[in-house]
Length: 367
Image 1: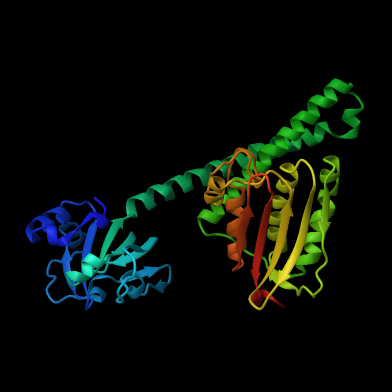
Image 2 (image 1 turned 120 degrees about the vertical axis):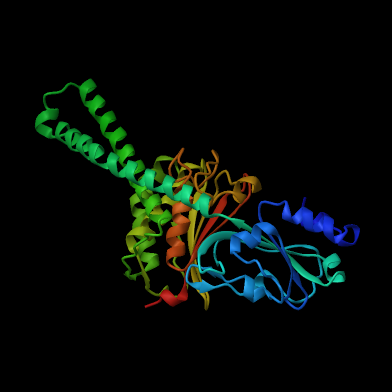
């Protein structure tokens, strides 16, 4: 049953209490003065609170997100509302019990006009995410160990193939044998790329993005990326245009290798999914940020694809932004790298009208 379906005046208090107490998630009804009207049985046990008399919201909810305290007025705003519905929802929050334990939770809150008529400010639901988080950590740890184990045999394969590619050995081979070794080499390269991409993903999931920041000119860095991709574009009869800005682009303190990889990945896929036309790269600057814009004339992405584009392991076959075909983690990694710099990545696209990607860096990185 959705909170939206609850009409308090239609329920005797006993029935309403029984409904809330039967739920396997925490429920709080907060009064208009932030006093606690009701805590269900699940939440009392979860928070180890058994005497709720005279409690206010700040007594019950001690919420943090990473190292910062969450403002409870965000969760349950004291002001009246214009429209009914969800006012707050957040995962990966930490809540402290009355005995000092810390638990991982998801919190959602709802405000309805009917509630105000019954002196209720908001309804808050609390879901225990501890077990899910532990399971996710186990999956990440298993994945991390697996790809690191794969790294060694892949390196051995690469070293042996490099020996077979030496000129002294190649001179002994016929053309068919050379093609066979070339195919082995390309397959080994792809396997190594997959392993390294998965290692990067695991580092990101474990919040281990290490930035080696140096003073870097974003325009010059982009020009270097384009130099390495010109042949790929020319082979498809495409042009890459780098438009020099009319204003100076200042140097930024960024990890040039990681940002290079992001720019390269996006341009590569713009080329891959553009059959005719061009890729145009421009820059914008304002008081808050510097934006690098990559615009193609390719297939574009329909609205349904855009909604999930940044999700991990999402794979949209005609997306112009699949970094690794079949993996569906390319744009997720790109986004996390840009966010680690304090910036963000934005995608604008319409099907059959091309795609524009904006990489935005805060002006505070300026040196």
